[in-house]
Image (cartoon, rainbow, N blue to C red):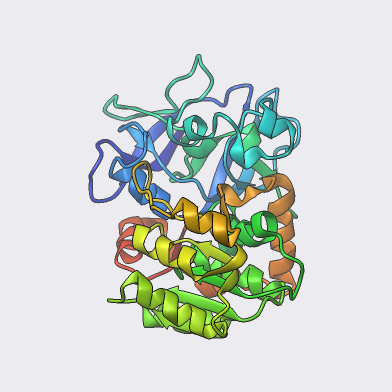
Length: 374
């Protein structure tokens, strides 16, 4: 079938290009989904510029929400007409998957970035000039009006779900919230919390901390407008880290905790000096969750001696650390209750202004752009 898609033919192009493509039929393990809305994530930008092992000649996008139009014979948990939020693909059979730790599927890097479909179907679409395009980015490739979505990436949601608001839960929002609710998993009102980076992931973590009544809640970022939004969403202390050395950031955060340090920390910045500040700001026996990364090679030195003598726990969080089919409906429910005000971090764009949405996000003018296709 013919559909519009926003394609990347070469790494480093300014933005995905809008063009008409011929989409393949869904395989036995895929559904055809009409994409209503999709978020744009920093990971899409990194892949656009070749930072991840994603091929050129691809349809990106991994925060899609839509309606199922057709299903392959092995897709049994959704049917035509169901609303779905698409998330990441996982193998379903490895050790972590069998233990319910699907975020850490042993094939996750391959499934996220290689854009493989079933072995016999390497390409997802063909442009009108014959150029072959890969799909299957995170199992979905949602930068298109219609997408072929792997069965493990399909998460059924209630019929009254507002996909304009909730589509982006499938990656960034779920990752930030899950860093707190699944990976840190603190008891309610059990201690202090700090988030480094007040983008979509960081603010989602902050909303989860507010939901759990952690206190104080400290937000660290370089942008005053984002820190103001962090206050609106529940931060009790904000620290502008622009131009500050890690030691200065550490001192400001520790001051906010009476010198004790932070018991629960999430870094969503992916910036090595900031990660170091997050580590040094942690309380004795505190836990630091690392979420932010710009891909392979974006490492930070944390120090084994300090980790040992302070009894710190350092954890990695991939895609929120939960089972999407369970966690996504939970977050939608919290949103409907007013406990997770996702809409406050969204900016809506039309498909015709896809490039504008990407430019606004890259320039820091918006936190989470949502592109509407309906």
